[in-house]
Image 1 (cartoon, rainbow, N blue to C red):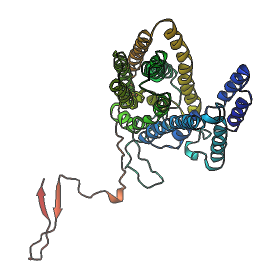
Image 2: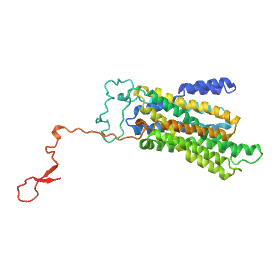
Image 3: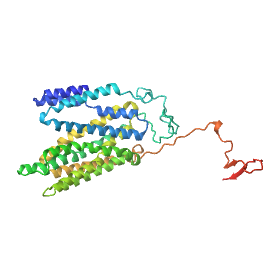
Image 4: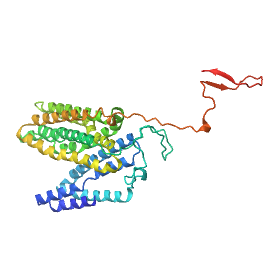
Length: 397
C-alpha cells in the first residue's frame, strides 16, 4: 500500500508526460493486489462456509464502494485540477497501510498455512464432533473442511467461466453507460445544439453510484449460495445479465429519447445491476472450496487477475468493435458472451462442492456412565398412588 501511495505521487509528477504517466500507472497497478490478499485473509479467519461466503462478498463489495469514493473525490476536486484528486488517494492509501500494519493480526494457528496438515486426516469422510472455542459445539451446521490439494481442472473451469462472465458484464458497465446512456441522452443533443436530457454532471454521479448498488447483491449472495449453490447462482446471474443488456438497449433505442425513457433506463439499470453482479461474487467462494489452506492467496490472486484481465482487454476490444460497427452489434456481442458464460458455468452445477450446502450432523458421544440402563422400547415411572408400594409401572410405547 505504501508503494501504491508512492506510485500515485509519481503519477501526479508525470501528468505532463503521457508515457511516463502510463509507466507510473502500470507500476502502481503491480502493487495494487490488496483485494486478493483481503479475500484470502477473511477466508483464513472463517470457520464455516456461510460466514466465509458472506465475508468474501462483503470484502469485494467494499472494494467497489471504495472505487465509488474515489469517483466522488474526483468530482468534488475537479475544479482544482484533473490530477489533484491523486493526493487524496495518497492520503487514504497511507492511512489504510497504517491500519493494516498495526491492527491486522495473523490468522489463528490452527488455520495458519505454515502449520503442518499431517496431523489432520482430511481423507476420512466420517462425521466427527467438533468443539469450538466459543462453546457452541453442534450449533453451527455449516462447518467445512479444506481440501489437501488444489483441483486444477476445476480451477481452470471456474477461471474460464469468470473470464466470459466479466467480458459479458462489460455490456452493462461501461458500455450501456458510456456508449448508450451518455450518447443517447447527452452527446447527440449537444452535437445538434439542443439542450440535453441528462447533464454531464448527472452522468458522472450515475456512473459513480453504480458501484454502491452492489451492496444488495453482496447481502443476498451468501443466502443464495447456501440454498442453490454458487454455480447455479452464477449461471442464472449470467442469463440475467444478458437479459438486462437487451432491455437497456431496447429502452435506449426508443426514438425520440425523452425524459421518461431516461428515467426508465436508469431505474432498470439500478434495480437489476445488484442481481447481475452475483455472478462475479460467486467465483471467489467457488475457488475457496477447491483450495487448500496454503494456496488461498495464490488462487485468489488468479481470481482477481482474471477479473482485471477481462476488464482491461475487454474494454479495449469492445471499444474497437463499437468504433467499427455500432452500439447494437457491440451490445449483442456482450449478450452472446454472457450466454456463453452461463453455458460454461452450468457445467459446475452438478459438482457437489459448488452446490447447495448440506447441513452437517454433529455426533454427540455418550459416555458409558451416562448410558441409560434400560434400552427397551419401554419407559418406567414410579407409581403415583398413595398405597406406598411405589412399584414401577411398565408402559408400552
